[in-house]
Length: 111
Image (tube, rainbow, N blue to C red; front, side):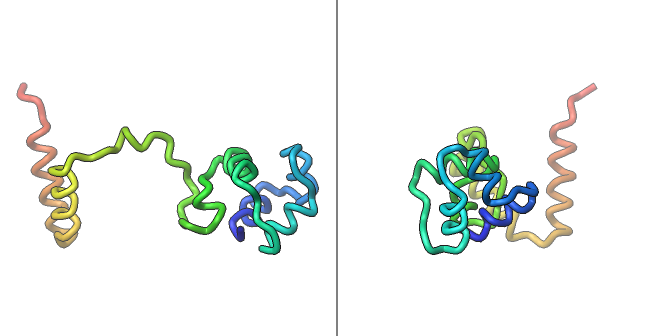
């Protein structure tokens, strides 16, 4: 729960103030979560993630990405798209630039 402390401090909140704003826990619990001597239950994790507009994964140090994924379905890829992206990632950066140029030309509407 190192990230909990980082998020709290980034907002300029004391443990006491965070507990007051949440209204469902105490300063002592916040201190225990940050020290790793106690773990919050799932409901508390959800409340903390919502409060800090982040993911539970970020709170529990499962990812270094603090941004919350809003709608994963919007970015669901077909197998063909996944394969294309894998192939694109394997290219050197100068070739990716060429592929981007080709895509731009193909997407231009005829005048």
